[in-house]
Image (spheres, rainbow, N blue to C red):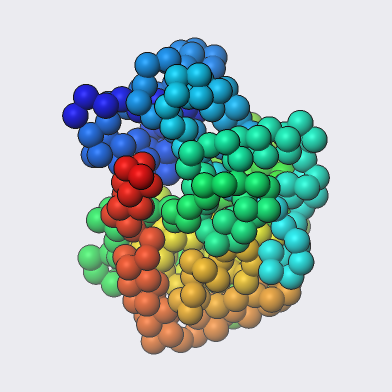
Length: 345
């Protein structure tokens, strides 16, 4: 005891962000369980302290100041995140605005600088390890996100499950495109034609801002006849999100790219089969615990959903395997064990 760790979140309201964003809260908890007194810091309201034993930042190009301060104090700096460098079929197609190679040159330079000089660069998947290595990271480690499998659990009674398909996404332009929200809305009437009692739930922010992108989605759902079968849940807290996982029968997240897929892993921990796409780190996380869409058309997405809705045994078996996979490979305990070894080294 007695060691201190500076946990850096670049921006405003770092303490609030770390309470809301679960993967940040998880890493703070891990550091505390490893015996560190954690000081949450940002550049706007608190500044970055000079007297900590280790510095830990999420996000690469924004870590430049924590890295410089850590170097000044001759203390180790650890940085985690995703770079989303996509090339070729392995990574899959990608939005130009999200792909690393299309970002501002200063952001690219800062990322290369940070990952080449940090004592620990933490990648969330094998595809991110490869990308970070291409950017010059010298101390890159594969450390998967950790799902708290004591919280994210199946329902106590299987009868809690409804004919409900759920997805989680921020409703901003890049996520709407990357996670194929328009295609999902267009698939809903196709599924409802076979299963008129089906219900889709989209969890995620966007309503509060009443953005043009969100309004476009609402208009699209009305235009194609999906609005009767679709609930916009908006932002929900962790307990409400877990309850929705436990009430659902399928988790839906086709995508153009994922550097990991935290919501996918959360759903799998709750014993949900997944309908997704074989891009980025998705096959690494999902394995054989879901169905994959190769073309991501509304018709194909609907076909995969209907295949699962028609087969109770398949849903049950895929869900059982999904839970087992997360417990064995992507648990909070696994992340804590790896972080502990890296920091000690």
